[in-house]
Image (cartoon, rainbow, N blue to C red):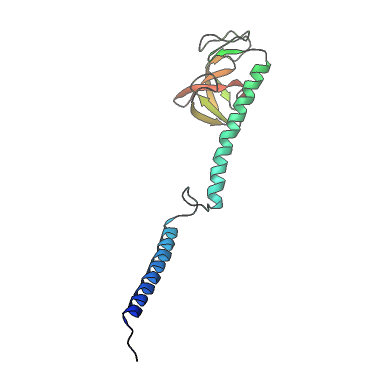
Amino acid sequence: MPRPNAKGKAAILIIAALIFIVIGFVCGQMAKALNTLPGNADDPVATQSYVETTVGERLADLATRIEELEAEVATLKGGGTTTNPGTTTNPGTTTNPGTTTNPGTTPANTTLTITGSTVNVRSGPGTDYTKVASVSKGDKVTKLGTEGDWYKVQVGNITGYISSAYAQ
């Protein structure tokens, strides 16, 4: 059997090196794919349960925001205009936090039942204030006062405001 010359040996070494590089790349990609769990933010092919959970959370937030905006629209249709958070120019509403001049409203320190599906409890009387908690339909809260179209309420150890459109 003839012996390969130096050029033949170099060609075999180059071909072998290329084969090892390709095998290493393929194995590396497989190892990388095995470390990515399906259904997380790093996985381009998310599982159905991950998508359903993420969509469900965002839909709940959007439903709450829609309810708050509907309450604001109802307030605006009532003829009043808000001049800044906590004070309105509606007759029979409040200008001082925690007090009201609106006759016929429920007295302070009464129990209210939440009527909206998911209602945000905010740090002040308006949607511009931060969300400090949320309550669900049927939950009970303690009314501490009224500011315009917002109830000041106690939810557990949290004090905040909810739209009066979503509690009775």
